[in-house]
View 1: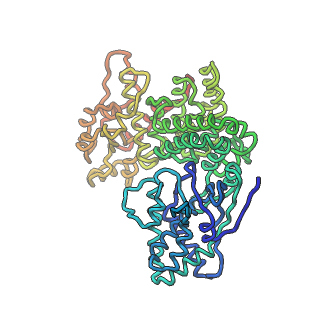
View 2: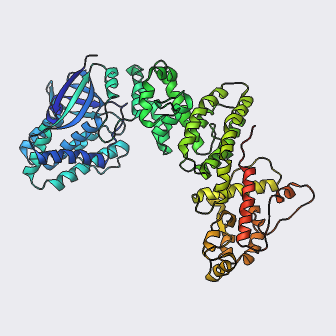
View 3: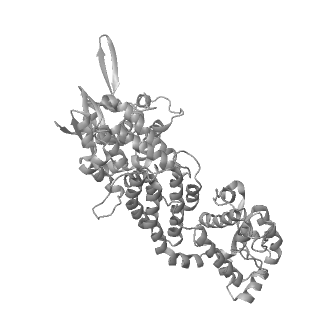
Length: 597
């Protein structure tokens, strides 16, 4: 590989070369903080010593024709420098000396026959930017409806203008700063004979502000595997991955970590079967992992695999299976998990298991996640387990006897895992109160109780969605049986019987909480239990109705069987709240269960 490198200042870079950023490159992403940092760093050095150089890093280019260079790395800085020169051009438009310097740096005239034409020294070829830099340089109207990267570029230019105007009140000072930037701000330009060579170098260099990350590096590894004639095709396929993640506000690197742990054998230097974000690139480029991923021989197949997993990843996060159908247990996990997402490792590894078995596995994961959350076990512990188990689950998805092997997996891994948490779970549950977990998780717990009782009452075996309790449309709220904000008289009466300062403890206990639709909740208000009884009796939610009324129907019916697990009360004090918390714990052992298919 014949590599050439030159140390250039800004003036020599733009005077002597034409740069173009290909359409497969990452678009302009710098924001105000990145631009401000660059300007502040240069300005600080300028103030300290105007004779000292300020190095802003390196750029990687591939030579195409005489003076024409394809930018592989460094377009964020090059574009920003070009915008800085455009801003100087606008502010110094009446200074002949400044304009002479700037015109040579920004634009070069050429004579073709009898016609004088010209080219700008930087051309952006990606979407929405055609002619934009020319428009900025020529000070055309920038009030249009710019989108995407074009919007970022216009915003960057306008910020640079404001920065220069606020820091340089005198034209002579502005002129001195322009001279410093043109002559003393330097970079290293690494020039390679081929795009493939440039991409190899690209992988080792970090950009200022928005650095390279493993997602960028993986993209460039894949681009290296295909001839340039296929770049457009590969760009389109890669863009689908990024757009789907962005559209659903999913973090790129979290997905990439989970994708690797779900699909490949992973072991880091610490002997763990997990991979951190800062270890991704090293892992991807190791010889044995190149063979695992097979991106060198079959880059498009590898990209398609990522696309399939991105699609599944997003759907799982939304409570849907890989076909886009609602999955009750995935939806339950969505309502429970919040920022918890480690289960997606195992789900990605299981995505090709037969649909019914996949649903059964998800049901078991819901229980496992609930146990971990309630016992406040560090989620990293479960991540390590999911990554370890993913290898086994992948193998199950390739077998014909999936049910047998899945049951073996559940018996060997998930059931023992729950068993180790049983004691901690019991302690946590019996101490559980309104402040133990976030309100959305508390509502999930009460909804699971309510759904279990309601479907058992109807003799149904398979639970359906919790939407009837959790959706905004349902208007179901958490009700404090002892009012959360009681009248002083009610609180005093309670504490006379149950002890001083006991009210604030018992009003928060899980045993004192239930679900009630908004109209009834408003009607119940801050009243005594005696006055709330009739409201609870009319509730369509059996969990709430049963607090004051249990109705048996016939003999050995589903209604009677569920009623045996419930209890009602005539009065409401500390004893009754403790009893109800015990009752709910007993129900929890029936609801959150790990079992074979």
